[in-house]
Amino acid sequence: MRDYLLTLCVTAAVTYLLTGPVRKFAIATGAMPEIRARDVHREPTPRLGGIAMFFGLCAGLLVADNLQNLNGVFELSNEPRALLSGAALIWLIGVLDDKFEIDALIKLGAQMIAAGVMVMQGLTILWIPVPGVGTVALTSWQGTLLTVALVVITINAVNFVDGLDGLAAGMVCIAAAAFFLYTYRIWYGYGIEAAAPATLFAAILIGMCVGFLPHNMHPARIFMGDSGSMLIGLVLAAGAISVTGQVDPDALKIFEGSTRQATHAALPVFIPLLLPLTIIAIPFADLVLAVVRRTWNGKSPFAADRGHLHHRLLEIGHSHSRSVLIMYFWSALIAFGVVAYSVHSASMWILLVVVALSAVGLVLLLLPRFTPRAPLWAQAYVPPRYRRRRRTAAAVEAPEALEGAEGGADGAAVGAACAHAHEHEPPAEVRTPVPAGVNGATAIGARSRLPDRRKAGSRQ
Image (tube, rainbow, N blue to C red; front, top):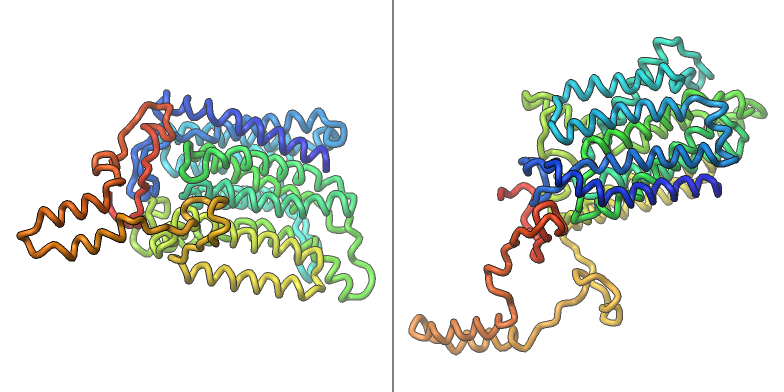
């Protein structure tokens, strides 16, 4: 565990430290596309954040290769090299797309080629456990097709959910954390070395997301772009493929005892069939709904729109940050719920906790405009948006001054009262965001002190 944590920390540090220079490089090269109709942000923001994430991946693999306890992963398996080869190819295509806007079909072909590169180097599904049947060996063509399909679906699911600041990186980080707990239990608890590569991939993926999130949280200073979203989707798929198709179910020695005991013990074997789907359940649902919606409207499945789940959360009244937190909540509930159930499948408490947390999540969805306020004694310890607003003396005197004004004859008195009530507010021209230099909080200048509160569907 210590070596995994060290690898995670090195990956996060390299990603975090390189994101700042990468942002300046993106600004210098003009990798700042104009705001599109489906975008939520209001100011052009540089992309190419995937460059820092890729070098974080390389740093994590390099450190793990030089650690005594993790060096065996590279000696006994070719999967880390297969991952690096596929990641380099998909990252290069993503960088070109962030700069030059590559056609969607070309990107789809590149994703399939990247998956094929990993298959050629041994990262493929060899068998799948089927409930009631047992272990089913796959032919080379079946394994290749299944591997390519899983890689393409996962990459596009992560890419589809990358629509709000910090959303994709946070959801993938939560999924990778749950996946790490599961694979570490298979590797350490059952002593199966074949699960070590998947555990390493999950730890590196957590580090990539944790290192990039401080730069990507709302308001984002840089976007990961397709170079980042496709990269983390590929790493997530590689871990799922490794633990699903490489770990032999017979090595767990579960088929002993009564039928009930064997069924409960076999659950860790069948979880790999479900876990890759549960950790991307929300992105996958968004992907399916987007394809159905666009096809129903007579559009191409690759045509972008503003009908994604995060867009709908904004339209019903949730703020940007709260929409992201709601998506985090559901992702964590599904991923960690499945992992917890795989450990204690005979306990009903896990199911009850999942149901209770689901009810809490539904309440949060039904109260989109509810803003919690901290008590008076905690005013100094919470962000300003959670503090109670105090009515100033000028605001109290303003209505009385307005009542003293009679009709249009005393317009001067009304104007004086309004000026007195708002004497501390800046003039209108100060409220307009003024572009600054490239060293500001965004690509074109400093962030406005008065954020735009209009809904996502409004035009600007």
